[in-house]
Length: 291
Image (cartoon, rainbow, N blue to C red; front, side):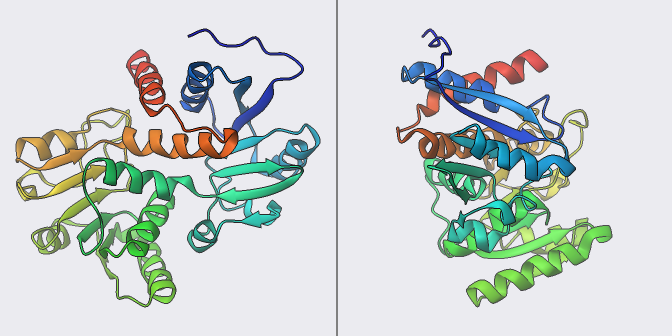
């Protein structure tokens, strides 16, 4: 696989965020372009919050085909869209922009990426009881797609930001007319909810490098019969996932969500089916190099 030389005909895609230095998206997308022999290139752009409007105007002016959007722009970018996908509108966040002849459409492939990772593992969310830890950006995308697919949620968030969980549960309740449980993220609340749960999802940053020795769930509360999905992808195997395996639980790592959200964005950028295995291998290569 050799990348095509960049020329005046090359279609440009990229990712915007701040910070942006550690993004794995260029490695994943450029490997996929190369695998399919597509004349595309994907680059990272550091865009400060105050420059977002000019960056989106530049996307149109430079005829950039697609942009992935990461922190801190996923919400702020919405007013700049000409169209927004209904799911992204419900979630209130856009992580993928497609430029179609100067008209920008915003999508949220974080949500669908989580769902695809779950389904590829052989798990359908309909009817499942899910304990979701966290109420930030990742939790918004995950909670909306799970509720839309018919799962039953309990959301726990730390005391300092408990109002985020309350607000998220209220929004989900209004959108889907379904009750969503909510509580503070502590041992007692986890112990009360986990025994009745089919799936545990960590959508907090606890356990993320450089704090890889941490876990949001005490090891003695983990058990077999539970599926544990950790949205943290660095390190590849978090302490939560390691202890879940030791307890006999099934696990899904955060790299799967990262890869699938990227694959779905790739398909929107190119119109081609994404070579998911190629993108996963490229992401793993970056993770191993950073260790």
